[in-house]
Image 1 (cartoon, rainbow, N blue to C red):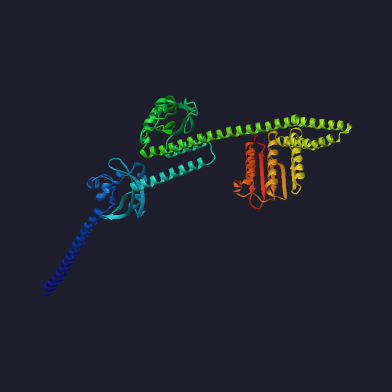
Image 2: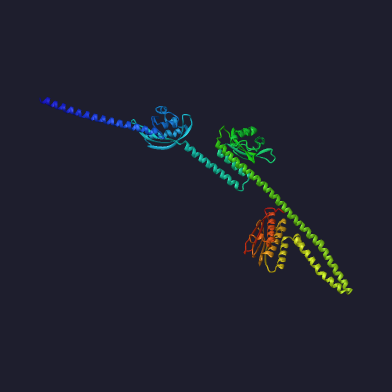
Length: 563
């Protein structure tokens, strides 16, 4: 009995153990079901979230997509079922970027890197390239390592950033061109900068500008960049003749490729030697008339989008404006030179006429009056011998009048042209004139510093310097009310300088409007004109109560216009 009872107790105990294990198993099963339900709920929630997500979501395992959301598939132009379990990440990455992307996936699978954020270039099902930003991290999927992450199509952002950078680059190029045109650069230098900028902005192999010559026989290549052969000097004029007068289109860029083909057909040999296959060209127009061409070209076949054609049109307008401006400046400079030359000739003719009149007064009228004086003195001597005192008295009254007339004729002759300047030169004439001035205007203290030799003054400048000094001192005597005047003529290196400075009342800004100062204003204008027409620089420093300083200087490196 005892043995059976023990066996029965053991069976009960084992039965209880079985019941406990069954309860535990039931509890575990319940827990498993709960976990499974929670996992299913989480997966459902995950799918709902990812499928509504604005970014692409993916899961990669064994180099194959195990999950992608609809947006992920749409980014690359696929359906979800075309990717899941059928394609891997290598199918969606541009070949050039796959080594980097593949290495990043490997590092996360192996655990070397938990998470990473980077960019790469992807390819859609159509082959179109897109820009992708990805965030991925390591995960376990079904007990094995995997990569889960998000993908964002940033193509629009990258292109917008690229466009902004391009616009900034174009603006900087235009700014540098504008600054160059505002500076004292030649037309060739400015156009060379412009063609270099066109080549860089449009990323072409060659760029050039050709402008019609004066005779309208051919277009001269003013500037070029990228040409292999330097012998390209001109292009056929027939291109401009085909452009006619007026714009062929409201948008000249629309005809840019047609213009290039026309230019290429007319200059077959030149373009063939350079290997130019594609390009665009814009006629340069001034007042709707074609005056030249701006061309960019490549040695490979490529398209030029509207934005690049617009850039070339803008550069063409800038080039046409610069060419027109420089040509206008050249015509203006030529007119100014001609006017300066004519004015110099007029002043020289005036000096020659003064010299002729002075010579005639001295040799003609002066000699005649001197002869009259001599005859009167002879008559007086004869009359005295006849004791006709009344007639002698009448003749004696004529002598001072004749003498005054002789002196006045001499003064006029000297004012017209001092003979001493032709005989002894400027230095002696100026010293003589300063002595005469001091004797005449003893109330004005005169200081003079003549610090150069006669041979140091160009012949053409001698009469100019004397006339300016003469006019300036006449102004001092008539208008300044000065007590002191300083006159200096000196040479400093390659510069001759004349300085007349007084301590008088100065000149008011509206002095030219005053009737009493009309002569002074005319004198200042005459001095300035003489100085500039002889190739010098004229400077006037003055003000009420501070006196007047006149400075005229000439560079000996430049031949005076009078020469």
